[in-house]
Amino acid sequence: MSTAYQVIARKWRPQTFADVVGQDHVVRTLRNAIERQRIAHAYLFVGPRGTGKTSTARIFAKALNCTNGPKADFDPADPACVSIAEGSHLDVIEIDGASNNGVEQVRDLRDTVQYAPAQGKFKVYIIDEVHMLSTAAFNALLKTLEEPPAHVKFVFATTDPQKVLPTIVSRCQRFDLKPIPSALIAQRLRLISDQEKVKVSDEALACIARMADGGMRDAQSILDQMISFCGSDITEPDVLDVYGLVSAERIAELAAALAGGEHRRMIELVDQCDEAGRDLVRLLTDLQAFVREGLLDAIAKGGSTDRLGSSLTTEQITRMLDALREGESSVKLGLAEKINFEVTLLKAVEASRARSIDSLIRELTALADEAPVAAPGGDDGSKKKP
Image (cartoon, rainbow, N blue to C red; front, side, top):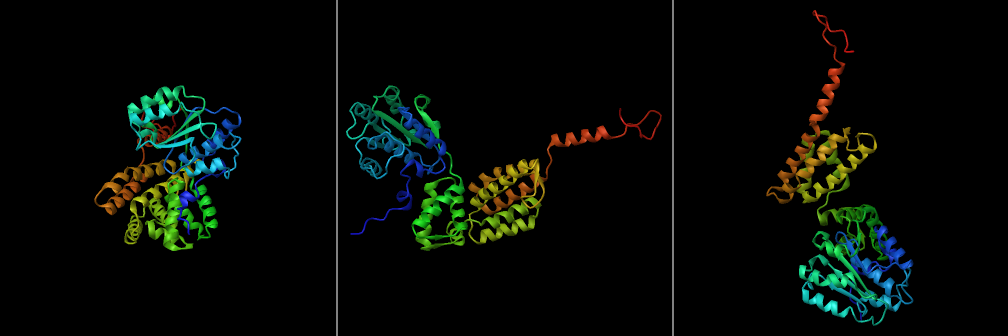
């Protein structure tokens, strides 16, 4: 009997600390805490979706409850670790904060924490989307969280830390998980595709990583969908067509037209992208990222760069980027997406050509200092200021 298909995001979920990608600061701290026996009673994992919050919480639970643990370098094939990964371990309780957000559920949790672990050394409560708990539920949890039994550990995960009560946050060790760099996402996808025996071009992986916006789970889901669409051979045009993306070369062309003030070329490129069914909102986001790279290059080179195709100063690129950012809402929410996108580009060109009042005053002051001073009696002004 064939086993049920498991999507890539679940099949390739991190199982050990070594599998966690792009969160070295979190992994290092947790490993050191385990090795030095300085394990806190409550942790709060904060970060965007798909960056590894819940996966890291499970790995931490494995390290605590593995055979002969706690130890950071546990065997993922250990029966205790396998049961935690499958969700059947009696002492690792995962709770969805969105659907168990009432005070009654928290009171039940508060009653059960008093009982000793059944299988491992610790009872680990993983509460996902903890910000969804009600205020009454948070208050019911406060006392238990402040003075829990020695055998109890709490791990909270949230994408919106501003909604978590400060009294809860102050009782936890907070870890901020960062968006994963595109290069690391592409590297991980290359490993997965090789193991899955799927041929994927480097350009296609770069597109998928760019579209994932720092989320590994999103990238794996996109790869899964592309395998369903293309089979065992995935190329960049396939990804561009399915998701309406614009190629990196075309983004560079548009940035060059923007930097050079080539209005006609900009309109041509926008027409081509629109006729090909490309996502203009996504194009604006990618264009901003490309211009930002030019800004960083200008800063690194002392104030100017030709990376965008024309020589621009830091001030010019900053004004251009600011105009692109201001046009986001009109492109996303406006009725005429293409028109609003074109207007945003034209405004960005004009903004890059504008000069700030401060810089003009400085230049005029410098010119005034160098100008000759007219002498009394109608002199021709050849004398300089002292």
